[in-house]
Image (cartoon, rainbow, N blue to C red; front, side, top):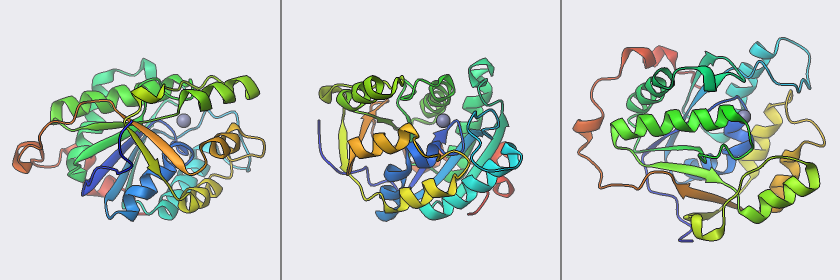
Length: 247
Ligand SMILES: [Zn+2]
């Protein structure tokens, strides 16, 4: 394991599968980036319409978009890009299409790096695995580093024993960054996802076990930064400024 510092990126793009992943999963990491002055944006590939949790009335498709925008404001995000790929069906969507979304969003954000769930998907959900595959494919083209959010193996194992969940963790020697975090913004963002943050959710036990730290792995080895002209270029048409929701 190495140091507690996040990379000093000016701009970061998080690539996630569902509205709430940016808060329940990445919330403390993204708010730590915000607090160090990084401009943080999120690309969310589905509208979360297939969730089995329905803590508030209304059409989940619309409810969850509103929740995402409200949560983004609490975290301090500067932009959200919400796509409508099928919730629960990302693995069946061509990787090229998803990678193009991530690539175009990273270009439009002029991102210095990407944050995603670990390549295991962390929670056992195949949509999470696919979203990270898209992030990695985009990063390979743009030569961007990718940080993966993960759990220590001890935390994953404890959750799986106690709650019958399917979390995947890593041993300490496979974890590159252990970052002290303040969960204030994350907890406010979680509250915005009222349809999902139901009592008894495994989320609460995970946050207990993690306490004040989050764990990250380099999913790509960071290379020397390329001159910005080589990897920014013109924003691609599929992620024009009108697509970004400003929280
Ligand atoms: Zn998710």
